[in-house]
Image (cartoon, rainbow, N blue to C red):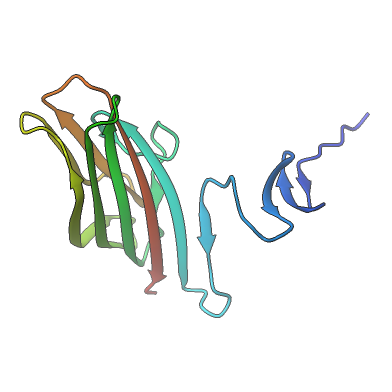
Length: 169
């Protein structure tokens, strides 16, 4: 006897597995990644991501090895707002990184330029917390490497990353 799965529904909005994704007033919620694409410009997209990591790690989409995928043959405007906070909540390091990165036909990602703005740095002088571009050496993948030293405190890192990609070919 066939089993009827109820994975998609549009009653009162749009739902996946009975979790509302788009409500009846057109609000989007509970999505992992959001892609915006203008129907008039098929060569450009915008995607938003939330990445996470702990202590010294690579920020990821799933606390493992899932990173941002950049399409080949694109130039990408990447804006990241990243914050690290210790487990007591009294030490913070936050910054905004605006980057231009290319991804060539073989999937090699190259950061062409970067502008960093430190929003808050309340890290004690004996500690070092840092954020840098992560080159996975895996095709088409992009993320950030975060680190903390000089403390045994757990540091939670969260990033909101906005990627605008334009195909050049």
